[in-house]
Length: 411
Image (cartoon, rainbow, N blue to C red; front, top):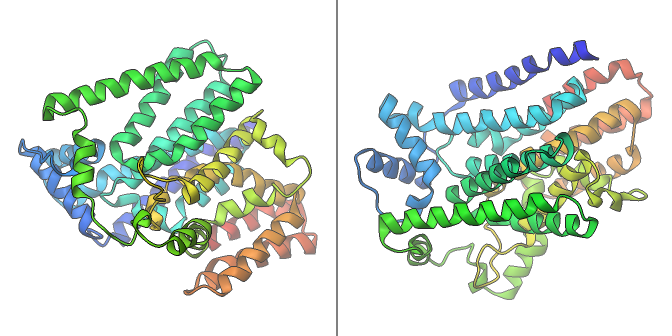
């Protein structure tokens, strides 16, 4: 077993190379208006100026890293894409570091679910803030996971500070980090009820308040107004298709109860969640939400983040859910890849929760048939056929690696 694990770092390298090859052969330049605007802001920062009336200017990690690479390599497509690529590589490293001790099969499945997700790899080299938010969320969860389940809990202050820092990184990158708030509240309340890790959450709160105070202090230094970022957001807001608080109740209800779920299936964001929700339909599944182990922690986190993405408002003054664009939800992909990889590995090894998984795949496959596009033929039908064939043919366990490869190829 140890011998197999020695090969694990090479698995990570393979996926990093795949992302690099995708960029080399598949990069088509800037995608739209937003990334060009970030490039303009980064160029302005390089020349010593930044428009503080522009709310995009407050997405500091995106602007600063792009400006840094512009300064080193010059303004080019290469310089624009490198920060996002490095962020993507970091996400893969974190996913790998969490899964590596569960063996090569789980690691391959997890990295495949993450890397081969259409929109994740598409935005892996784009000058956009969403991949930064994905790094923030998976980093925060990795820190909590390591402290709660992998450490002797002797460095509470350090882990608490790193958690606060990772969340601040997401907050500075884009406001969609607010979608993680319901999860944090759930984690804190659960630990309060079970009377565990209370010191960690106290230290995290203190660190978070301190870092936020420092952040707003610097905004005041540069702009003369503590609330300048929020003023810029308000002044740059406009009526659009995502202004759900200003549209009819019918449109809002469609977005909340149908829109996000349809988007998840149509844009293949649902792939990992099919497996996660499937195993909840078994006896004593509520035990996962007690967060007694690492697997339960990531499974519960994935479920809560998914529900938050559907129902959570991003406005403090009105009920306005997030716009239905898959890039806003990139942070879900590495999170769900972690529990889903273990579920899939257990299916191929022990055929665990097989009936629930096959039924869930059948339901999503059937729904996808009625959606526009080719997602039914390219993803869900092949996945349903693969899992069903493997279960009912009684194929020996030694062939599971072949099916894992087929699974990765289908993605």
